[in-house]
Length: 562
Image (cartoon, rainbow, N blue to C red):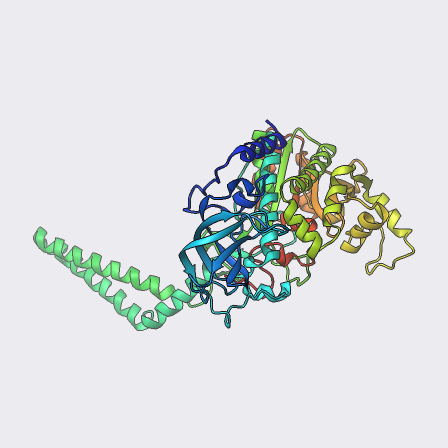
């Protein structure tokens, strides 16, 4: 049964049920299961339910207070009616208050937007809020301001909507690849390989903490002095002479054994002193450089910038695989498009070439867009109303027409002819296209997503397959409106001698990539893959201006809250 059929069946079953489903792992009913039924909850009138959530707003009218309660399961709130003569309102009404209440589902007066509301009969739990101190007021707060309250900002409409959209895109990602026979592989976060070759990596090391620990140890218990060492050596010499004398004089075994034991103790003590005598404060060095053989992994290690190289090892055994996880880049960038920690979706396909790669990338992006239209329309309507009026239209255009496909050379030629805009970066063959170039191609020239392929080899990574012209590689980027590059991919270089030469030409150390070269030495296979910046996909779908609002806990230069 397909996704659409499953959803239709589920909705039909829900429409004939007069019972509201309780959350499986909680003593409450999800608000979504009340108001998102096909009958909008009208078939539940008279039922007593327990709901929990946070008060968005409150208002009083004719002795009744109306609470707008939201539990995050959907965008819409459930209106809760509270009789002020029966219940204390002081703790219930402030914005941000958490309530768990029991009540009867009733029909609102005619003409009201809500189709169902809850008449409160019992207050079960209350998490109070001091409105004078609560930083997330019901008034509009700029997204930049909310980044100072990353632990509370999910309670706002915008961030909660983005969270649900992000969740839907993650679910859709696994659905797409699982439906097409891909195996999900968990690649390491700690790596010794630099996939991009740019060197902008966070280092993972215990050397600094070990150096601090050693400094404290040496301060509390200073190392032995030269005099201490000489005295210990002299003691060993004396004890050795004592053993020798006893043997010469043919002393009894007991006396000789005791002397030997004393000698061994003196030697053990000397070894300990020699070890401490060699200890020096600071980082271990060898030949004037930090000696990483003393580090935790006995070599340099980093936070990964990509799981691609590692997931290729499984593509060369399981054929179609993908990884989906956090990646890191120590790029000191403060732009609205960069994060220090970001998530990547990286499939790899064996027995496939660049055209297969482009086809998979296009289908995947279209699948994500259609998924949002099918499953997140309420949230997308909020986005269209408050953030980006073109958001829904943009998704619909993505799924309705094929992407344009042009070579890098053709892209440069088109951009060189542009006269109605002056680019900040000069357009010429050999440059790495800037965001302004990418967006002009997709927003102005083609007015839809564009796949640019066959890039100059000097601006691409060593593992991309060299084309017959010896100037370009079989690389491709998927460019989309609002964002620019969304996907970067390539056919991988499967020829051992060619990739060895590429590593050498780019000045990369060979030793860290020997395992990668083994994939070419033993059963090499034509294969391809790409990486989609997941946070950029969220940015594209929502039309947000800053990627720091597209991820729950943004990390960027100077900021790593929580």
